[in-house]
Length: 191
Image (cartoon, one colour):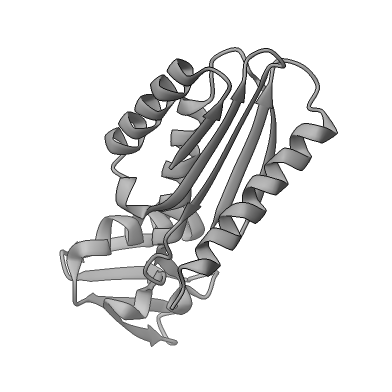
């Protein structure tokens, strides 16, 4: 992690703030690299984060058996692992409607007249969860009052350029330079 600021004391304070927020949201270990550029004289605040890859999405068939009864026009799900059951029910209620989803026991769910292909449904997406936490952290880190924000996201890099005035092209260029430097640093350490 690196905080770049003309004011060393300000940089130290922001370093501490960033570390505390990452720790509070329990994403410290998921962050590969984080860079902050601050210049209150402009005012501009740039934050770029790269994060670790996550586990693949969990699909319905990863933890449940699927059986379709064509005569009754219903789907019977036998749950093998309850870990993702709350997320499964929430997803089914959203896609099929609460009145069509019946849970007869902890291990059985019946869906009447399914409209979507629930067999391949993604029930839990760790990367999406991590990205939400990262965005939460970034918006907590950005100084209050800097509400004009330019967003950049590519792969496992997320960058926000913030100010209290119109974002200047030179700041966006600085953001891209930081990303380029982070990628170069990452490639240097690959074995």
